[in-house]
Length: 77
Image (cartoon, rainbow, N blue to C red):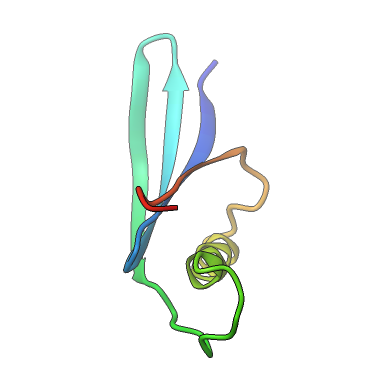
């Protein structure tokens, strides 16, 4: 039986979210969404915070909270 999961790519300028299904015959990308990172107030938080906030907003918008999730981080993280 095929399983669906969410892939998240946290880039330096953009966040990409994809829904992927995998099964015995391989994997297939079902949907991809991309959004510019919402620049925050620039407070003293972690540099990835704006990207994480953008990803969480996208997950809520597309109602993907119930799916297992994997994340890729930028190379300098």
